[in-house]
Length: 401
Ligand SMILES: [Fe+2]
Ligand SMILES: [Fe+2]
Image (cartoon, rainbow, N blue to C red; front, side, top):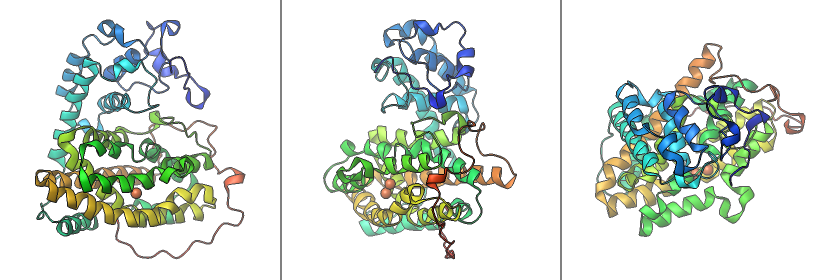
């Protein structure tokens, strides 16, 4: 809805406004986004999105050429702040409440051409950086086994174990801030695949997604449970409220899901991504919940993780056999991308975990900038457990995420 201000933490974004001195806020049709540009490309796009799409000739003039030049001069698309934020905004036009903008931008030729250019570069970069896993035979059992083996073989650092055993409250809050970019929209990128699948494969995906969306109860939607977690930690639960705080890699993780979900030719990749995601969720979720309990936080904060212990133990079975396995049988052309999408999920999780743990081991914050002062550095009293549960002895697990 035009004119609805969406300011995060009560502050207009001074940094972004300062980069656009020619832009008279009184002339804007849509509020300036509450996050900052990260370079010339995202700066031009953010300004254009605050104007009517009919004005594209002036506001996005030269944008496609500028995108091509930015890509040509970029050595690492995955970690390029300007390109990842630009792609995040372009995908954001297809989601609700990422950025307030004229709906005409969603299918505007300029935004679509730019999106295609960046996502093709991102896909190439991911295919170059992440080895194609071996392709099993096309049977549900073989595909499920291969996917489980891939997740078990992944030798990433154990972020969940760190949270369970060592993390401070500040680090736990940082973890939630990073996770919020995907989890406040949990399941949405994978839902793009629903009309791109048919028959039993579609039915399996919907069985998983129905749980993710709360089975008809909005308060049980997993995104809503995660919003509870954020509020319990004193965080703002509005979408993208902490966008400026997360690195390009976190945006890339969400962008990869959107790319896989929004391209029918990549439907195997989004299915494989979901399978790997579900297969690496149940045990880490228990450890995350243990970590928040160790820090004395209440059920309001841990409910999201507790919910996933059982839910994803079921989802991983459906995703491995009935979703990915069935797709491989029904459309064998998708099999290499099923395995590739799973490998991308694992690699991005590993890279993000490396980023967080490297910062914390150095005694630094993992965020691009400090959180606002009104975020509690200690959990609010009403979200502390009355009697903090004793830390349970941790079982030895091999899951890495
Ligand atoms: Fe979930
Ligand atoms: Fe799940």
